Structures are given as structure tokens and as C-alpha cells.
Length: 339
Image 1 (spheres, rainbow, N blue to C red):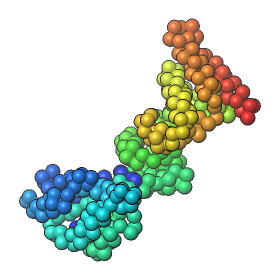
Image 2 (cartoon, rainbow, N blue to C red):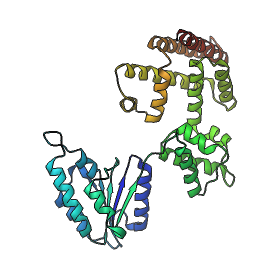
Image 3 (cartoon, rainbow, N blue to C red):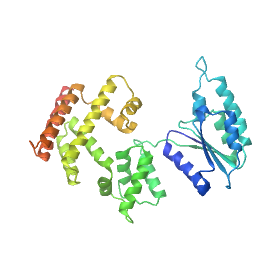
Image 4 (cartoon, rainbow, N blue to C red):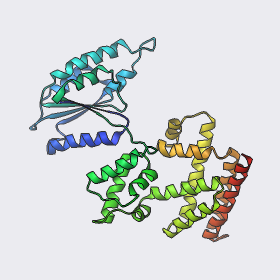
């Protein structure tokens, strides 16, 4: 069996691999080999796929990013290298000769070109070949919320109204993290459906989303909305110093994002530099455009003043937060008027 798993969504591919390993049972570790495609030779691949399984029905050989590496390989003139093209042709011809006791998985982190000879060869192998494309569902198109609903249903987890949409919005397209949060929420809810209150109580990402929304409201002069969100987080038991820490974190991210944007860096470059997922990075970029660098620096100084005032006892924590929200809204107001 030859299985090609390609696309940018890693969780689905890892779940597919987990299913194959589960079929091997206790012998999974002894009958599984993982090879790195960037350094793989024909001889090494042939050797591993020809090894018979140890006391099991099949042997699992996983090759990571071989086709991705070969598609990127360029010759002196920027065209696909002759060596890479020769390897692809050889592999396409070699795959049908694999022993029936070997399951070869080509795990690719990118979507493979439809004209790739190996992809075509696997598609033609009928019962012995499978091609699965895994792409990250999009939040804006509603695909992510639908994925949450379907994934929960497959796990036997019941969701209340709006829960799928909330998890999709709060966490973004991190399917592994969504899966983990669903497990935690299901354990807490027991036999009943998971509710919005459960999400607000147990998911730290819900609180982070509320902080983001509050900062967004401040930047667009919606002071009443900012106060409502602050009150909501207080009712949920959030400590004032925790709230201040989260507000400071959000504005620190905006400062860094604004600086990187000024250097001409793109979203994925900024996400890598800040060690953030691209989804919250994109949201922060959108938010940072509403401020000048001078305003963000002034806000950050005001945040530090509030932190000192609370910790030295000069101001009561909740009063200090209320005064902070008013001041930050004024910064947003000045900027919006300037526009």
C-alpha cells in the first residue's frame, strides 16, 4: 500500500498515521520506520521497504517531505534539477513494485502539484494507492466551525449552541489545540452538551479573545464595549493583575508587530519572529494598523504606570483598571479623529 498525505494541515495527517500505527498494535514501534526525504537515497528507500514485518501483518515506512524537497530542487538556471526529475521518474516506476507487506506513507507538508509524476502514479494504483489532501479549514468561510462540529460528533462529544463557532474564533485554525480543548471540555461537561459558559470558564483562549476584543474596542472609541468586556471578565473571576498582564501582553505584541511591519516583514515572517500562530498574528497586524508607533509607545508607558500603582498600593486594582481603560480610549479617540 502506498499512501500520499499532502497539504498544510498537520493534525489530520498525524491522525491518519495514528490509525495505521493502531492497526499494528503492540508491534507498532518495531514495525515503523521514519525517513527524512531531504537526505533520502534510492538505496536507503529500497532497503527499508524490502524489510519484512516483524511478527506483524505489515511494515510501516514513513517518508517526510520527499516530494516537497524534489519539487523545490532547482538547477543552475532556476529550473527543476535533472537529478530531481530523474528521482521522481524512478520513484513513480518503483512504487508499483513494493512488497504487499509494506505500507509506504509519503508525508508532505505542502500541497503537491497535480502534475507530479509520483502523485499520478499513486492515483493510478487503484486499490494499492491512496492520495489524501489535508488543508487548513478557513475561519472566514465558516469551514473551521464546521470542522469543529464534525470532529466533535466523530468523538461522540455534544456541543451546545454557538460552541463550535466560539472555539473556532478563540483558537483559530490550530486543529490539534481545538481537539485538546474539546477533550478537556467533554471531561468537564460529562453527559451533558458543552456550553458557552464551559468554554469561557475553562479555555484560556476565550479570555485572550476577550482581551483582544477589548483592545479593539479601545482603538475604535467604543469605550462602553471595552467596559462591558472588562466587567464580563471580572464576573468570570479574572484577577485584576491577570487582566492587566493580558492587556500589557496584547499591546506588547502590537508594538512588536508594528515595528516588524515597518521593516516590511510579511505575516508568516512576523509570526515566526514572535513565535505566534499566523492567525493571531494576522489579527494583531490588522489591529496595529489603527495606531502610530508613538501612540503604542505612549500606551505601553501608561500600562507600566498602572502596574506600579497597583503593586505599590497607590491605587486599588479595579479602580486602576477602570482609569486605564478611560485613558486608553482617549488615545484611540485622538488617533481616530486624526484620520
